Length: 339
Ligand SMILES: Nc1nc2c(ncn2[C@@H]2O[C@H](COP(=O)(O)OP(=O)(O)OP(=O)(O)O)[C@@H](O)[C@H]2O)c(=O)[nH]1
Image (cartoon, rainbow, N blue to C red; front, side, top):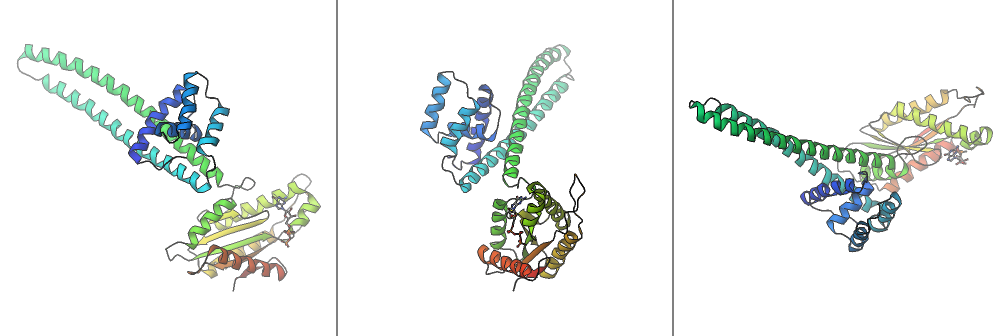
C-alpha cells in the first residue's frame, strides 16, 4: 500500500522510478509505476526482497509478474478508497515533478543566454590580444555549456513527456473506471460518489435527483431479443445526454434505470426538463435496424426529488424511487415529483 508521501519526496521517487522502468523495458503504466514507487519508498520489505531477487537473477519483469506483484503487494485487500488514495498520491507526485522539471528546464535556457551575453560583451574589450584569448576561452566554455545544457534540457523534456503520458494514462484509467460499458454514461459507482457529494455539499446550490425507468422494458427484450433491448438502452442514454447536457451528472443506475443529478435548477425547471425527456421518448419511432420492423412505443417514467438540507443519500433516493413508483402506478409515461 502506498503512503501519502510529501510531494517533494514523492517527486524524487518518481524521478528515480522512470529510469528504472526503462532499464527493465517496462512501459510507464500506473501499475508498473506503483510497484517501483513502492520499491523506492521502501513501503514493503517483502516486495523489495522479491524485486531485488528478480534483478539479481536477471529475470525479466514480465506482465504476469508485474500484475502479480501489484495484486499481492500494492492492491492486496485495498479498498476503493485506498485505491483512490494511491491515485491521488500518484497524481500529486506527478504534478509536483512536472512543475519542477518545467522550472529547471526554463532556468537552463536562461543560463545559456547569460553565457552567450558574456561572450558577446568580452568581444568588445579594447586590448585586442587579451580580449581575443579570453574570448576564445569563453567561447569554448560557452559552447561546452550550451551543449551540456541542451542535453540536460532534452533529457528533462523527455522525462516531462513521460510524466505527462503517465498522467494522461491515469486520467484514462480513472475515466474508464467511472464509465458504464454499454452506454458510455457514468456508472453506478460514479453516481454513488456524486450523489454523496451533492447531499453533503456546503453550497446552497439547489439540486435535484431524477430517477428514470424504461416502461415495460421486459416486453422489448421478450419480443425483440436482448440485443435490441441493449440498443434501446443506448438510445435512451443518447437522448438523455442530448437533452440534459454534460453540465449535469447522468448515470446508468441499473439495468434499464437511469439517474440524473441536476444542479442549479429549481424543481419547476427540473420537472420541465424531465418532461422534455419523457415527451421526446414517447415521440420516438423506434424500429429494428436490420428489418425496419417497428418496435412500438417505448416510454419512460420518472420520479423527481429535491435535495433537502437534512437529507441523507438513502432518504433522497428513497423519495425519488417512491415518486418513480407512483409514476408507474399512475399508468407509466409520467413524471412525478416526490412529496
Ligand atoms: N437488453 C437488456 N435488458 C436488460 C438489461 N438490464 C436489465 N434488463 C432487463 O430489463 C427488464 C426489467 O424488467 P422489469 O424490472 O420487470 O420491469 P419492466 O418490464 O421494465 O416494467 P416496468 O418497469 O414495471 O415498467 C428485465 O427483463 C431485465 O432482464 C440490459 O443491460 N440489457
